[in-house]
Length: 375
Image (tube, rainbow, N blue to C red; front, side, top):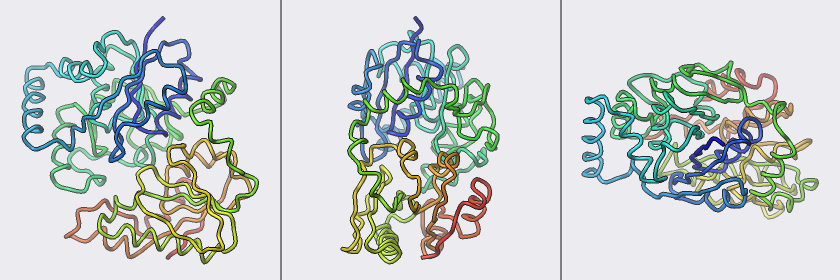
């Protein structure tokens, strides 16, 4: 039996791998490597244990991109030396072996994206192994420039990302990354992807999936899903990591969104689905009954329960792409004040879309299914 290793960062990552497992890879003996996802640290190992399909589950808590400058400099010199001596693959294996012992025992490698420091290292190994990446959200559907990134806040991070990508190790900021040409890519709409530097591109297609197996794995990973009273939910409110756009005022913008829900849907039952990295506390009108969905339950697996409900998003989200097959309509909130703040020269924030840019995204992916609300 062939062996595989999947790197798991977050709930969305695990859900997509379970689809892949039930569609293409149930005959492979899999191990999992659970790594930190932003400020939350390592936490997906518990979910991987519940699923019961992994022979070994490894963990790690090292955050390479947030290491002290002295550590980064030492790391860079080591990577640069392997780069100029044409031994990049050896370096990739060296890092991975620190987690899993011997990466050479695996025939197949998988992860949600190539934008993590460790997950990006998989790409070079695609010369000799099957390496698969899944759909990592809306950023997948826009160009990848070679020398800049619209997804990173500071010049320091942008510089690090460009250097890593140009040397062919990883691409933290969704930069053009030459080694992905060795890899397979699975996405919701492969035909809409602009960056196409992959060996193979396929849609995430459930028509080929062993649905009995997939549903049983999802139930094992997230047994609490059945405890929600879906029939009595009127509104589903999907939040965003607003700290990405305003590290100083994200709570203010979160309060604006909560105020809109309170004004528009008084007396209703609201399901609050927070982004896993969202740090806002949402306070609603006392007439509203609020149920908060476990933030570690991926939004993709609740979509079948949303028929007939009002759906509200704080930002244009990759969840909208997964939702299209259901034909749902949705409201999309827009905050011009946040847009203006994010584009100020003195702010090192990720760009928050203007209303025109947001409309363009909606028209591209879900024409006729949206209403943009200015708040």
